[in-house]
Image 1 (cartoon, rainbow, N blue to C red):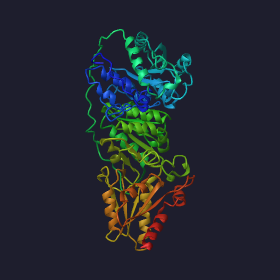
Image 2 (cartoon, rainbow, N blue to C red; image 1 turned 180 degrees about the vertical axis):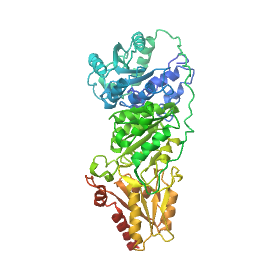
Image 3 (cartoon, rainbow, N blue to C red; image 1 turned 120 degrees about the vertical axis):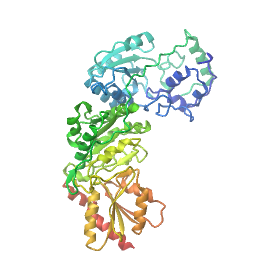
Image 4 (tube, one colour; image 1 turned 90 degrees about the vertical axis):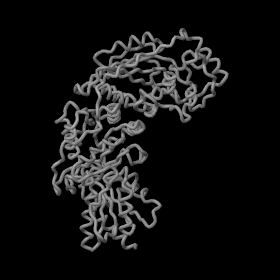
Length: 575
């Protein structure tokens, strides 16, 4: 402490004590570091009370990304540790350290990260495993079987060193023993070491010490201090070259023609590869689906900036967060949309970190046809708007396959702050926009309108094309409809939707290749709630899909042109 005198004993709450139990949170260690400096000690007493965070968070001083309980931090350290990039991206002047508790070693994402680090020979990565034997409610599975921990780490291709975690000398020696492979320092420790009645006991997780016991223990700890000399570490030299990713521009516009057909997943790959020529800071990650997501186009043109993460989506997202740290690269992750649901916690923590990562989920909806129902249930908002969200995970949700002729505009969403989720689909659809069409985040498009439109129809992806087809059917009946393309669903263009609804007698039909929950229909309904005279009819998938031809499935689930036309007729008849 700056004064050399212990602070007064404060009766901590159970929640405050519990916050310091996991390696992923480690607030007490962080606070101790701050308090070793000539700073007021009082803020430490405000832990979890609006001043200091109980868990590491991006807005806490000196932190660039948030940690999490249970295994999330491992993968996010891999991005800064990556060495297999070109010289412009490689990091040679520092090592990356990741602190893990033995409880979170039951997490699969930890072993995804360890496998990845071994494959890419990340020899500047050091994992420190705090093996204190105790979990939250029970002992950890292996307790203090240090040899098994060592064998597991070695089996994953790591150099593993067992040390006494309470010995500064052994720890310092281990830190200097990194080889041409990632290193795991397996530290045997005892929870509550040196505290009478608490050390290595199972019943103290999340429990504050009684006041009389706390006073005794503080004195006991101070009696063990051998030197009061203050040791200050030398700040590292900031020698990394400056990087500007704010002004990346697409080198040229695409050359698609209205009426031509292309799958949006392929257009995404083409646009991403083109963007890669604009800056060597654009990188792509994929989960062994590059020949389906078409990120393979990027790999072919920029092989040294493509990272194959294999079927380990939690780790892939974590790596992307690490790569985006310090705003030195612009990462794009791609896999099947359904597979992104496996990485929900990693995406959640990325959002808390305000990380600028871009996620592209492909093969969405029943329109994938014969491949359904494999990824279809997750559909467009698998990572943003299903039961996992609409809660702020994604700052930007682009419905890329709304007939956009090229995903250049969607790919460009990275230039605004926060996570971007882009939806692409498998079938080929007709291009409906000119190459010079301007797209903006949160700005919808009126694709079809007339002076006497009677209903506003909002569709995205294949359902936008179904809406246009429905317009042709209804036109024969002298019924005109206005067709809107939301482009981004989050943020949603509320003003244009309301203006269109009022111009069409308050009638809205939403249609989406997605479940009812968490998609476009709910977003639109939320946008117009409380507005007088507006009615929303919602068409969506209402059960687990099956395999079949795309057109057959669209009809089966009531989201094709005929279903849209019938919904429009129903609204007009009610009037």
